[in-house]
Image (cartoon, rainbow, N blue to C red):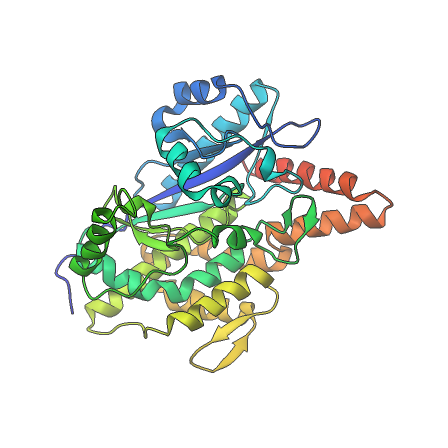
Length: 379
């Protein structure tokens, strides 16, 4: 079971943002191409187009520390914010837009996106959602698969902390992450299958490619997957966090959890692999309730409040947080619980505006204003 070499545990973060018109508060459905051009002049190919023209994606460089990843992400957020402002637009970090209509959006003219739109039809056109992906360097192929088999248990906890998608097409959905409901319509999403080895995983990919189902492994849109481009394990379940410090907290947690699982393996132990169906139930609960109603503790056979689960997780990975010098970033999760996630804050702003006598469209514009302000917090 043991592996002779510790993984590098390098870290990289990808985020997808929405570009909005600060006057109408609606999406900039066809923003000028110069936004991408100007951004690339500043940070190179760390900025890329996304499926919809109203979206833009950034990715940090490969980082060896959380402080380095923080500096990278802050620089990228500042770049997009400033370039958007130069074009009379604003940037928001949220997994759905409170008022935008997906049916009015245009997708980016790019071979990959044209194929996605053609093959997925309305399912693809509804993808007016943004997420955060975290890559952690795990160079050994079989170790990467083994850790992927185990890490799924912890991902709903991170989703609950990240939720930022309570609205859809001008309606309060009752979910803290409606993004997950939209994402679930795509094939090959959700938790990955269990694999005995990297070879078994590659045989699955080969079968899907040879039958023409997918072009490559990037079309496996699981909540966590071996990256097809880098020797990393890529976490994809979480919403994008409106506040940057929340994003860093979640990225640090994911990295520490992987090292904790590696330590168990080094000691010829492993985290118990729970039934995928049960972990998926926690995934739903995190999407539906965020941090409010707790998750199932499979060992106790009971729903446990998230603050209690969080304290257990902090204790579980404290050794790793100390190793990576990110104890403060991990403990920031307590701040998220106390003040609420972006989803909580969005709903609160909307409710207060409605109670003050504003109609729903006006109240939702207040939500967009809050998102613009909160996205710039700490930059």
